Image 1 (cartoon, rainbow, N blue to C red):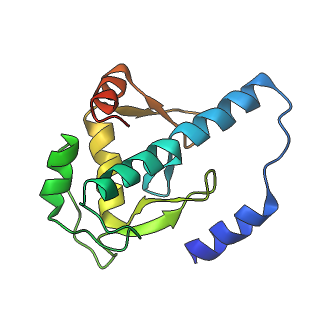
Image 2: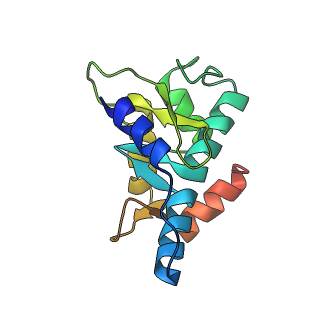
Length: 144
């Protein structure tokens, strides 16, 4: 159902920018945001690309090639993956760049791990995330 809703939203396009606040919110949403319970936007895509380049996830983001602990270690981030019937990892098409970011239980753990470690913080206005100075430093070290 979520994929159907996302497909319809992609067809509607973005409304015109009519103020600085709208422009700021749109830029923040493109940079980093939550998509349901996982990381999205440019940051989400960069993390997905990094994990694929490191050989930790399959190129289509359909499965992990290693244990979740190794994914967390590669990022320097403790990850707690919840048990459920959801897939461990799947790709989710990002509406901003039309490329996939990591969804599933691993995607949710990545977002929660970044929030818990203080790499990102939620903005109160919408689903966008602010990359903190701590996060910016760590992401620079990872070259993301």
